[in-house]
Length: 234
Picture 1: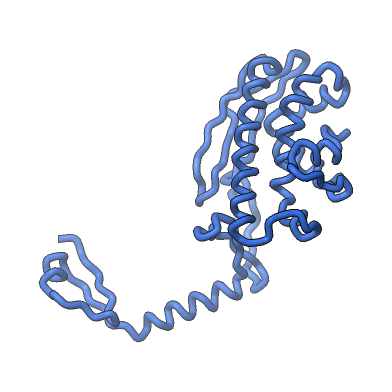
Picture 2: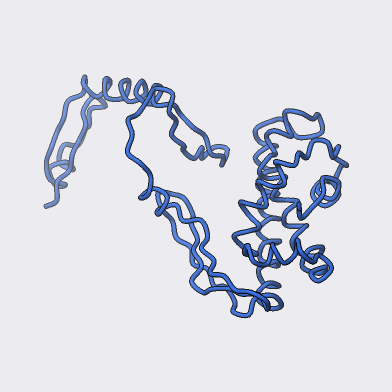
């Protein structure tokens, strides 16, 4: 059973009323799977579905507000293309997404604090680290509800990479990168990446190369834009 209704998503996460028909069941279930279940734990989610009246405060005051903004964040681009009530420029889009993300972080923190104070028998302490530019988290302490317990393991990007199968690149395959101008995640195909590399290294072929110490480099005085200078350690 969904933890939130489309109407509640519209009321909690949008300043202007959003037609609840735009909030598809797949939006809700995907956001629950990605954001709620790892944090709340499967055991507690199961208990909520079995007896919602026993978790009224947790559900209405903490889970639903966080979940509503998670849904808005995950499917903002799709909602943007299907409605006319959202910002359309890149700058407005970036600002809106950053605002939603900031709200999500606050709501997630308050939900986590409530879980540790009122639901879990043992508080969950998470540690975060960066792997290839991605922030990953893992639970270092197991969490349990009054009626059941479970060990929580949050999304681990490194383990996913290590467990993946080996394959060959195809021109249609994509790589993600961070666009520092917009702050958004972009992608490029292997075909376009090869073209970019070919252009870059093709321009390098026409250049001269110089190698020397820092002192020798400083002594040159003038420098040629057609030369690549490599400074060795003294």
